[in-house]
Image (tube, rainbow, N blue to C red):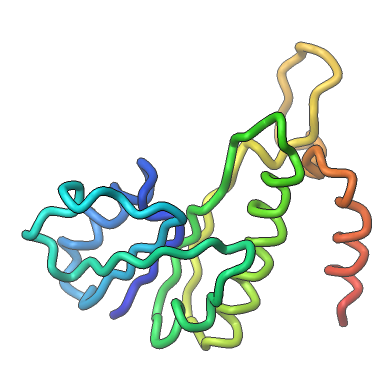
Length: 152
């Protein structure tokens, strides 16, 4: 089984790759990150991990997912919080591009993590729960949702 981990260089991504290396059904792991780790972070004892550099906002995702059985989506941003459009482009637009590429590529299983950065800005210091809006901080939310949800 070929597994593609998008956002593989983070804490969750490296732990996922470590766990998958011990799984008997996994024959190949493609670890995708915007910035590849230093070569000394990828020990030679892991020949089944192939690192690829890509950004889900604009790079060719179809080529990365070709032949994949499973995609693990971990490529979300918390920062830069002072540049909410960049976070929105990655967490929403990039995720939508990834889902579309997975569908085109015939990926049979997709695992996606949730990001706390999806929540809308709070107006006070009261704790929020899962009923809090998930429209992020972008001014483009409404037009994107209308286009995405109305795409037939």
